[in-house]
Length: 288
Image 1 (cartoon, rainbow, N blue to C red):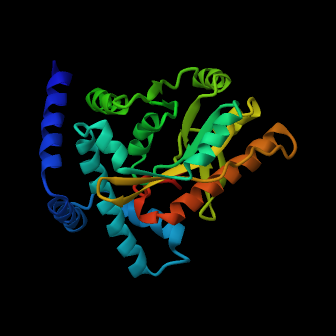
Image 2 (tube, rainbow, N blue to C red):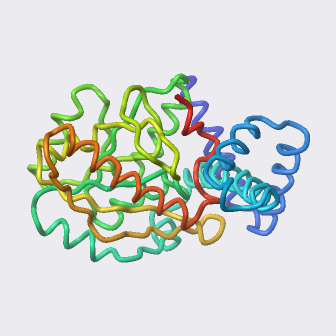
Image 3 (spheres, rainbow, N blue to C red):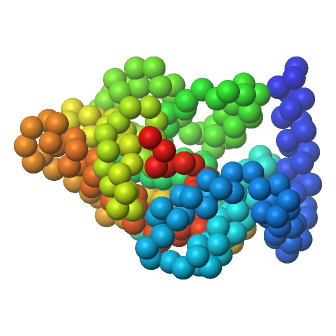
């Protein structure tokens, strides 16, 4: 009953936000950023530090501060879009999504080897996952348990709204290998530190990075296609597909894993550099 009530509240708020003019929502978002930055500076220090680590040698302090404020606005937009998504029609969602280079992904599927979408917490990554089935892309994503069961229930219902398939982390590697045999698509977010891993360079600084993707590719011939999303306007997304990145074997298994983990990290870095204001700098990427 609690979950049902929470969904009713979210749906009501969603209808209300979708009723408001976009210009007003943007004004409201800027107001929230002002309060966040000047009055309640929650995790501002983390965003400041990660931006400085990445761009300290490339941008001035003023440029980093400007990028920080743009990044805060991005998080507020994410929240608004997350709530709005609940009551948007599938037709509206598809109309608000522009696909760039979709043919690359369709060609990869023709190889009948399975596809890995290599992506990042860039733009509205939840939106990108959600629209995949609307473009006839059989997407599966790994979902890790959240601390809040209520929020997990809400976000899971939104992820499944368009037909995205969710799977838990338990024995996920074996499940993924089976999906590749069926020529399915598996989304892999590759830009966060999770548990153990190896150190590779990200923005020329060592960052602990998962080896899971490379381990999967040691056991399969799945095609890796880099895909990311960026916001062209509030509630309007562009999903960009880059050329496939082959898995290269350069020596021992350990050498292969290190070499390719670095390559895929470089791909993610290039994604972030295209739209740095829309990446998840609030995550402490370089924390060991």
